Image (cartoon, rainbow, N blue to C red; front, side):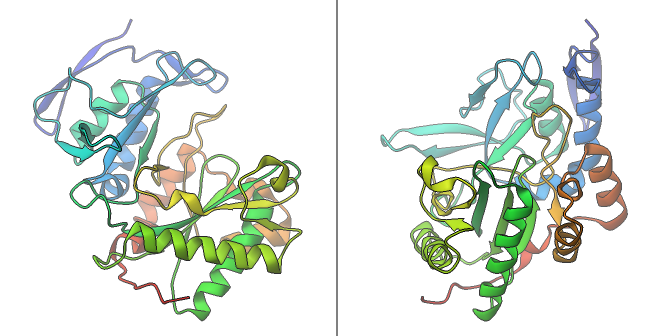
Length: 301
């Protein structure tokens, strides 16, 4: 067992099992994971800030059993920031806020490979900062089909004078996010709007799109999961690793880059390993910053 005591932004952390291979078919250890999150933190932390973190922990690595942890662990250090958020039963739950590098490293030392957060901040849990179209390919469809749907959504939103941003899920699909950053918009608004758009596209492109959740409806189609626009739901944070065979990342995609991938018919153009994610972010900065800063209002449909 390899252990190291490190000082991160003035906090002392005991980092354990550093040589444990958490991506065994790739040779990516906990030490590699900690280094990835250390370097990506300037770009990732603004998207995590003040959001209730759901830990998705893989103590024995990808491919092994994992578990979710919504409550902030009771053994957390005193300097970990927390918030209390309401639950459906009326109780309030203490959650972790990953607002700084030392908390991010502490979380990763717990083998929380994936970082899942809601679309709203903990102090305003009913007010989403953005609206999402979660594009999920059914059997017989793939990420390129998701890309075609993403471009259709982009064109429709442009007619409504709404800008949107694109990222990979790090799995099979894509996420189209519409920045809002307005106190006037509620989850009720975003769910109604996104469902309406999904149903319009389902009628217009019945062989490509479905707005229905049933598995039988998804075959060879892309499901637009409008239900993600809900205060109880979380999504993988941009720049987060995913627990797949390789350490791929949920990463921003430029619209021109998507078009090139479609022209080439190359789904690998829409998969980003940790190394490419770091290289791009360190050269170009936060490629998803518009989601944090652009202010928009939803029109009435």
